[in-house]
Image 1: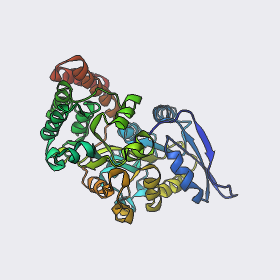
Image 2: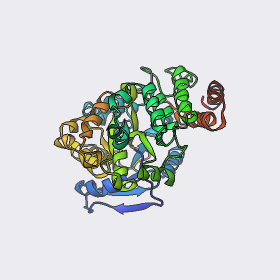
Image 3: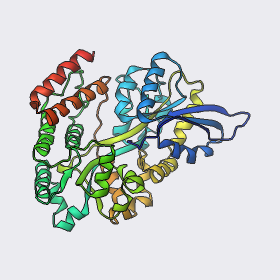
Length: 402
């Protein structure tokens, strides 16, 4: 799950010591410190310490810890974007026997993504990021547009952007989000994001070409602001109503209402993505490094964090959408959300989560993602031909991924 990042490291003891308690350290990134502060005092059989670092530094440190065989916590939090590379690089405890009796309680696509290429379970999902479209209601139904018609497919979505341009309203902050949504959410069965089942690159396939074409059409049509995400200009865009839509995970609601644009309450709604597309935009996993001193106690913490009760607590505390599908019948899913003009959006998020197909994680995902992002930047900002940009990216992927 994408979070607002906090600098520095915090280490806190969260449960009172007992003479029989095992010490457990969990390494992660904000805002999970807020969640852990709430739920771990109830894990009274262990002393739980947490080491929080910002998102990027946490994953860089973990990569080094796994490579050297020392320094990692007993439990580690892993962003979904890193799961394929980390799991298949080795260094984690096989959790298959711990998890097998309860795995059916969690979203299948997320469970599958936590498995290595050997089919064993090395990481378990703690939250999901159902991919949805946030839209400004004052630029949609209040202006006479029909949401269902706008979201019919990607062409009708872009046509909406052309109409908004006539009113000096941007469709989206940055066109790159459209490309990312398209190529992430239209993966073929049994494929990975960037590689097929045999490890061959897919980045020159029709899926990526179409994704880049959509983004380029928006950029060339002057329908985006070329505003980098997670910057002050982007936050201001939400507050000031500069753009009409934003693709994201369900978790964006927490950021919008809590700190990014609380004054825009009532102006937002959420919908499925164009063309009835289902996909995941974020999510987090828990794993136990092989260097952990007490695997049994580490699993106790994981099992505690992924329980239905604590999944719901995370949903309410930090807008972390539950991986535990048994929570979706909770009464809170039918509650109207004031910030979204009374929309019962949690039920929509649950529908997305229930219809996402598994995407096979691959060891080279991080490298491929970086090179595809570079290629997209060249297309949108430097005018490089789409097929050339993708072909160049594929050549580099083949050289760097073995």
